[in-house]
Length: 270
Image (tube, rainbow, N blue to C red; front, side):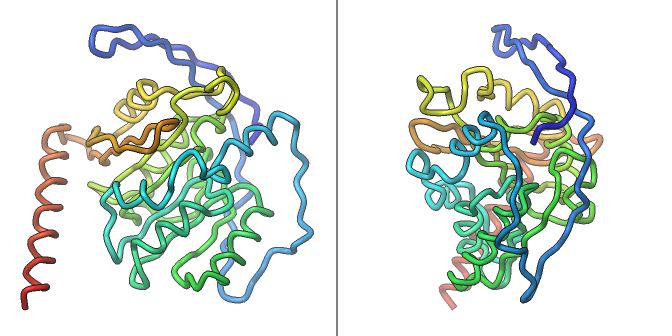
C-alpha cells in the first residue's frame, strides 16, 4: 500500500497526558473496485511486486492468527445474525471466515483488499469452507469511494491488523464511516506494541490512544474495548451523525442491544 503521502503531526491531550500522533495523509489512487461473484475467479498466477518492508508488514497482518484469535474476537464484538459486515484489508480472510459464521446465511461479509492475489485465495477458501455469504471486493480502503459500496449500507466494519499498514489512516476511517449506517459499528484491532520485532516495526505501531483519537475526531463515539489477546488491543466505536452527542449514540446502541436480547429470549420461550 505504498502511495505518495505527506505526514501530519499533532499533539492531543488524553486524560491529562500529551500524546503525539503522526498521521500519513496520502494522495492514493484506487485501482477501481472490482466485485467478484459466482464462479468468477482471479487468475491464480496474478502477482504483485512487494518490497522487503511490505512483505514484513504483511507477515504481521491477519495471516498471523497465533497471536490473536479472530473467532473469539468476533464473538466479543456483538455482531448479530443477518448483519452486513465489511472487513477492510481482509488479507487471507481469517476474520472474514469468523464473521461469516456469526452473521450466518442471512447476512453477508464483504472482504475488501487492494491485493488481488490475496482475494483469489480468500474466495477459493470461502467456497471450500462452504461460506456462501462471502463477497470479495478489489478496492482501496484509503481512497474516498474506493470500497465501491454505497453510502450507509453496512452494519459493521472491521479493520484488523491493517491500520498500521495503511498510509492514509484518516481516509481509511472516513471510508468506513461513509459505508456504515447511522449507529453502525467500527471495530479496530491492532498490535499493542512491536514486542521486539514480533509485531510490526516500532515506527509503524498505531497505539490504542492514537486510534481512539483518530476515530473520535472523525465521526465516531467510543463504545468499549474488547480483549483481543495479550499482543493486541480491540476498540469498538459507533458511527455518529451530525448533531448527535457521544452519550446519545452509546445510549441508543445499548438500548438496541437490550431490545435484541429481549426479542431473542422471547422467541426461544415460544
